[in-house]
Image (cartoon, rainbow, N blue to C red):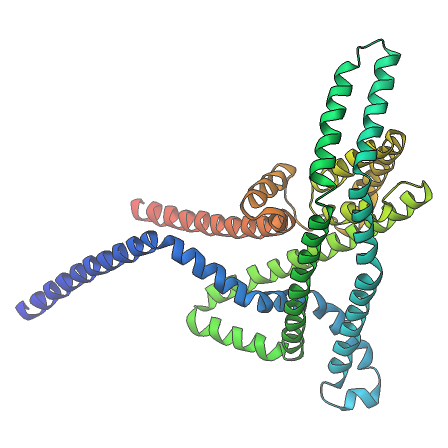
Length: 393
């Protein structure tokens, strides 16, 4: 009996020693991390830069896998293809990626030169646009008998600033754009590597899925494993459903905007429709972010055309918000308007433009995880309360 008491006492001392030791180690690690935080951030940024092609590859595989799977099912109907192992998948991958490369070539060949020409023309015509604005303001002042002498002073200051700063530095601006294009080319190389990675991921998706399942089953209980699988299924559904629908929605809105602007002979139709299409990916704020700079640009060129554009974009956004958006996106997220706004402000502030794009689906996934944990905790509290009642009775 004394032996067992001594043994229990020793075990308690050992547990106390272990707890103190772990607390000291954790304190040292936390102190080290905070003292070397700048080095840690640099290391994480470098690691993220190295792993960028892998992350983009995972995104590509995630987005293109449904298309490949659909093509695979269609091709499996042919007996000659079905007899050979994974031939339908190989053909599905080839068709999907050839279509993607073709779209990229069309974009680079036709759209980028038009975009650069529009920018170049816009920079060259900046003095003319400001002159249009001053003429318009002067006419308004003359109509309502307002003294317009202050306009002339502002005009001379802005014209001299443009002639001394903007026009002589047009070559530098164009060179900066060229450097930006060089950065884009480097990014394209990363994308090519990412495409290769995504092909491997799609081709051997069962193998990767089985490996992840084995790791999860090995390190987690069956209950925790099921919870993790259910959460990831929801993330897959939300991210896939929402992001793909949002991209299709923005592409359609961009094309509609371009066609309508061409019909109404609005200047810089391609540039404006590109801005509107890209910013439309962002929920709630996207239409305003795209419309306001475009409206300001058109106000400098031709106020009448700016008014036309304002009416056009208002009608298009009404169509998107009430007809196209609900048809494509529906209620895939299940978040209230307040939380959508909160998510965009939070993630936009932390991660910029990319954060605004992914804010809503990521926040939806986070809210589901929190909701799941709360339900689990409430269930545990109910069980604990029922046990305590039984003890009392």
